[in-house]
Length: 82
Length: 390
Image 1 (cartoon, chains in turn cyan, purple):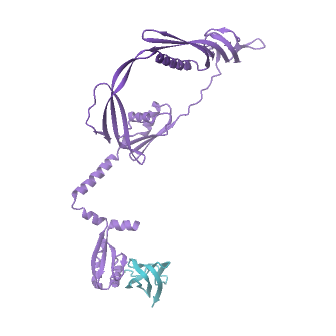
Image 2: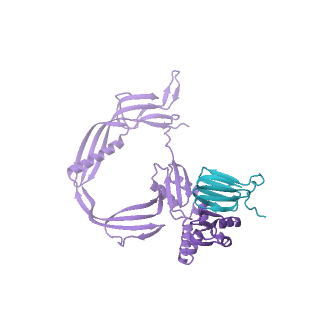
Image 3: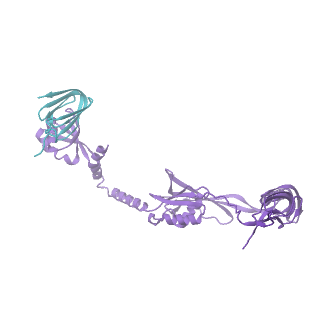
């Protein structure tokens, strides 16, 4: 069966997803299941258990694969929504 | 950078997403396994995808209610597709590759480094006669054989190696350091007079002197004997050594011809140029080789690229017409020339001495000046004469 949105190792370790920040300019989300909302000032990403909402200015999705996503831009806030 | 090159090699498409829900489309693409990058937001929705994944995006777009429109096609596959109808380009590229390959099988540049006393031109000529010249196949270059041949031809070379790198053959040379002359003091020898004269001073380091200061000696006379008697009355053979300064007289004669011929340029010059490329010669001028009295000078102009001499050069032949002009030296000119020649010969003659006085004399014949200089010299006349004992 195909693994949708769960990189190997994360689920087994008990983490729903892995978020990595490089300052407030780039965020890498591993374990995402899809994009719910995408605009210049907000990007909402669905993970297995939560929804992560990035807010800021000039936000852009630099790359998108089946289980990972890179958001770039000037990130001013990150919210974790149930 | 590597990622960009890879994307370019594989080819990619930049497309716009029109209508529908772009977010849903992106998620659907990700789930379908398509890798998207440079994803733009809602207003100017679009992204980039590898060219072979583009077709798989259409069902995703259909599900999200979007339409896709290709904006740019980039990469090698599109470039190749553009040149598909131009057979000449492919033929040219193939011909270029073939020529490049064939030319790379040969040596086109021969260099010599490390030589000091041996001129580079001589080394290159030696390499050429030994089989290494521009144009020879690289497989025929035998560095060891070349080194042996060159070292036999030029004894000054101590070590040599021929390195081929690409189309460049470089002869790396190390020359010998001249070893000092070893004075043989082991043999038995007498000291004899090298010239006739009168002894002014004597310094005898070994041997028995048979003459003394003020004596007149003739050439070949024994001056210092190798036989030395000891206090017990016995005799001992030694290697006689002495420095015997004597006043000698020498004569230097020079004959100068008064009637001369020289070749003066008439002012007519013919210049011929050839362009050599990979050993093939192409004339740049249409002038034929002139006949008559001409003086030829050659000039070779190499083309260099990053310090490497390319297998292309221009030969310039300069043919200068000359005519014979007979002239006669004046007495003053003849005497000057004779004096210069006499001085040169005197220096050659007297390597270990000096001229005390000289008395020149001139004797004029019809077409010749006989110039004679009688020299009174001070020189070391000690000459070793080895005695062979069985």
